[in-house]
Length: 410
Image (cartoon, rainbow, N blue to C red; front, side, top):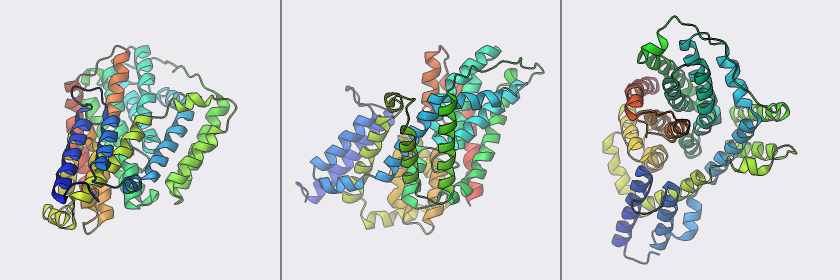
């Protein structure tokens, strides 16, 4: 039972929810050294402390399948990165590009495909330094290629449940199989990658509309053959099991455990690749949103949301895209959960939310974690990706890909 009356409990739940989401939207708590993960944890603790949720229900609110899936994918990607696998793949792809436009296409396709299966944030961490090294060796302007990495990582990750964190949540909430999810959204991602190449190319004519051929430059590839082979085989087996209908969380965590059985890599190196802050933020957000559902989002309130016509693909796409840019995509997906479950075709609605929340991340440089990873990693190498340089490509790409998604899912 709540320590307060029901009215006070509702007000407390709303206040905690809004404060948490504002902190997550701006990335910190003004005047304090509290980041997004801390804000989510504080919000979750306040939901329990104020009696909005019993502690036992707060525990049950945390979707352990999502946490296990994300943790497993982090460990698999860590092994692939430490083995040098990504450098080998990228070097093979770009080594066959004899023109800047072909190089751009190679970067976009490679980033998009890897992001579809291996979590886009991790792929951005891997691809950014590779692209910087390559473009500097070729004497090219690295900025449009780095923007293309950010854009294509978001677009490519639309295709599967394991492409990004919000898709992982949606996969677990919706019950949509890996194969069905991929079959529905691969066309949107494929067309989106094509549009990405065209927009980056056309909006940077000096870089790409040239007859100048690229010299042959090898991408430095330091790799451990045995570990790269083992990691690649485990990753391929994992993806195959996803498509065969095995529970994705179980498969991912078992694949991670298998890769930890090694004499060659220190566990500390793998653990250093795990984004504990992201896992903590997820756990906190699950509790915060459950608190709001428990105290405020009654059946009557949710029923009134039917007036918004969320079964309409265009309406749900627009709402999801706006909300994702206001509070970020993962919080947007969680807050939309109780409303999506009430529409006539919830599975299609979840696919729309997955598509829109992911593609909306390309609208501005601050729209997704993947974008920020590329910008921050580039800044460490003295390369500035300015807000407007990104926006003039990201905004039209977002509108174009959302239109593709609406057309396809209708």
